[in-house]
Amino acid sequence: GEDVEQSLFLSVREGDSSVINCTYTDSSSTYLYWYKQEPGAGLQLLTYIFSNMDMKQDQRLTVLLNKKDKHLSLRIADTQTGDSAIYFCAESPHQAGTALIFGKGTTLSVSS
Amino acid sequence: AAGVIQSPRHLIKEKRETATLKCYPIPRHDTVYWYQQGPGQDPQFLISFYEKMQSDKGSIPDRFSAQQFSDYHSELNMSSLELGDSALYFCASKMQWGGTGRGYTFGSGTRLTVV
Image (cartoon, rainbow over all chains, first blue to last red; front, side):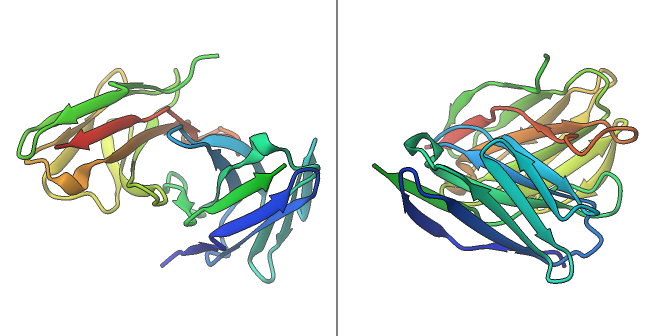
């Protein structure tokens, strides 16, 4: 079955770059997503990448996709204290309509 | 822009009671997904509906049932509630065909507390 794995914790200092990594198993996934969740809040879509892309940049966010290794990463430049949250990687399996499969989430802690 | 609406936002129930959670998808979205997120856990897929028919089933307990109505809103019915059912329940909606990669839109969730 499909499985999405992430490291559980990341701690950085304000102003540094953060890199959150994710591995997935379904090579047929068409889209891969990064969601942000603040304490007690909902899931906020940060960015997504189509499987035929290697990289996508959106302001402070850079997503890298290595399809061969089934590895996805999210880089946050100039990390701020407001970036402290849980970041979930999610894959959308190839079959139309299949639900998103989430990783366990990476807790990012930003210290000033 | 319209978002996915979930009600209620918070719900407190006692053990063995029943609860009904509602989800109103974005207009023209024909697919609804339900997720359960326990404390400190990742969202777990429960069930989904496409055009009012169940399209996929995840880890939904037999005590739970759901349906999608003619106006595409969906309800998750939970019976014989247990303490372990305390969680954040998310609904997401999507346009099945012709949508974009952004397609999955999540509601703010219903926080269910069973006491």
